[in-house]
Figure 1: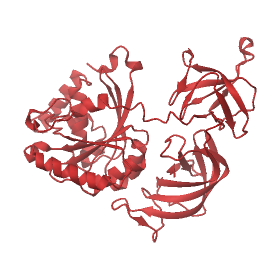
Figure 2 (figure 1 turned 180 degrees about the vertical axis):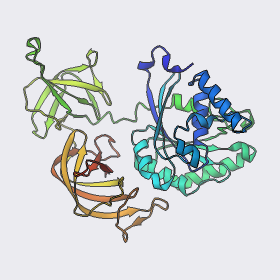
Figure 3 (figure 1 turned 90 degrees about the horizontal axis):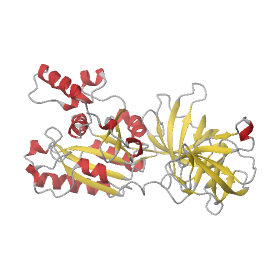
Figure 4 (figure 1 turned 45 degrees about the horizontal axis):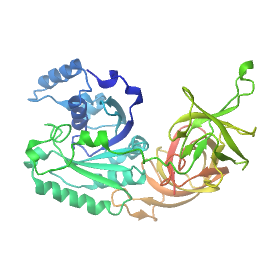
Length: 424
């Protein structure tokens, strides 16, 4: 029986995590194991994959079939898109972004991981830390994912050897010391047999840590959001026409940072006018405080000229305001980034146009070296660029606030998203 029917499901904390691994590292099997062992699939789903496994001549139930949603994936043995999976346990809700591991799908990895609280990086115990492992760790660092769990998979194929696990752990830690990753944990697993995935493994009694599921259910994510810098991008101005609401004027949006309370003194950007919060309305009525990432309507004591794209902040804690941005961009389109090219740029609820002033360097995604001699930025490349916008933006560094520190670039002719950027 699926856990989605549990009472109180809507009020449970949500953990978003992404999975990354190279070909045959066992991502699909791991996700299938999580779903099956946590009783998050229906009996008829299990029966279908059991019969499918039998038809394929496999001696055990192939749980990877639970997540092989694309026919091309089954035929070619590769994952070619981001697949979002949803499940729940009595303790938490989960959204899994199952992202491809190949270098040609870097843009998919960035898309899937951009909102994740946690990244699971799979390492094949037989192969150890390889270039793709480093690339996944770099992208997790670049995107500011607060927690990384390195699952050393296929431990059954190395006889559950502790020395193998410790060597891989040491290799990964050596590389990760160059990255900005705050919390890294290591778990030896066998996704195929379920060792240390949901249930503790009797075959690795030398491992004293938590299972993967226990870690996913208990890891603290409450402090991952920026609750210090108050940022409220205005998305919509609410002015009902009904007579009983004739004096109602509210500003709706999603809080990007900090905590807001009625009575707080705030400033509206770009005007710089100050006032106090009169009331805050949530989906079910007035609330005493609102914090990221809640969606609310804020009412102010004074009538100010506030519109979509403005930002409500604390008067003694304002974001940077500038038309010049330095960003790390992941290019997402076959058409190359154009130096001096003009693009639409979106940031929170702000929209403007921009021109690419400079391409400073590209990142070699395998070695992490800066490439300054080759500045042709194409599909899946990551580069540092500077842009100038047609209007001032109110922003924070991406490392301080992932919401107010990110932008997207759009081709004005086709309306396609061509780049995803992090302000640095």
